[in-house]
Image (cartoon, rainbow, N blue to C red; front, top):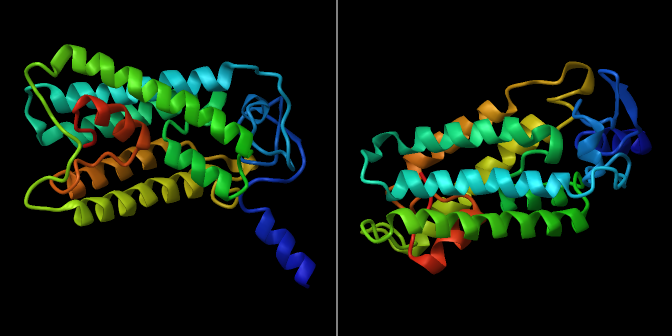
Length: 240
């Protein structure tokens, strides 16, 4: 009974044997092609090295586009009312674009959560972080080259809120993004290989929109360390 219970629990997020999905060998995970497992997603515990640098390039490009879009949206002189919607749409599009190559993390916090649940090998977590943070810094530099002379911003709480409130808001809504990603994308119960869902990126987009409207006037609504690290040294404010 105990062994059966343990087996059921370990089957929720990663692990399991390889199988054939849509004519392509894939892990037991959720119907994502084997290229994802070459990047370090676990099939049992491992993955091959068949895709080389492709997953890391996908994470770099996807994160760059998301962070650059955030910079353009926040630093431009346009009406900010629709900013969270625009950012949510960009994130949704890039998750769909990169999901079959790298998993479409595009957020170091999401990558860390996948490591915690045993769905991504830690060596790949670190490599993804390097790609994501590098992309965030480069994207912030590009956005500031366009807008910072006219639209200076800083990564600080939005008055009258203090750092305590800002950090609390960031933790809560970053947790929301990780929770949604893990349950809509990584969970085998909610996304079984025989009936893989296609709404995981939409769910992430809506979670970003909701968090953006809720926390934008408190913390700036970054919810992504690549945005915060990318903009902080250059005086920019990330988020929704």
